Length: 100
Image (tube, rainbow, N blue to C red):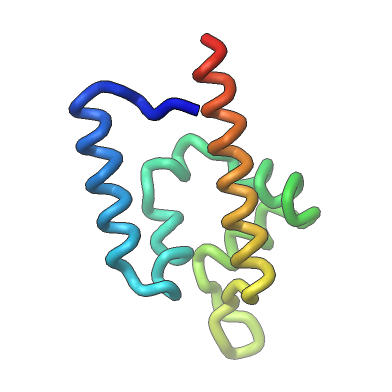
């Protein structure tokens, strides 16, 4: 896989990675919904394909909605599964890009 070669794209990507790495672990999933990438990815697709759950379930997790009196958050396994899902999607997009 190759990374985008434009200087501006590389700078933007590096800045985004630096901001993401600087945030606390618990904030990373929470801040995910505020990232531009979530405008591109369909929440329902991720929820159904990788979790076998509904769009609303994943939205509740991302929004930390109150459930039974406490914020609904990802378990460690769900966090790992979300990371793997995003890695898989990134890989599939990179393969598509490389083949253009």
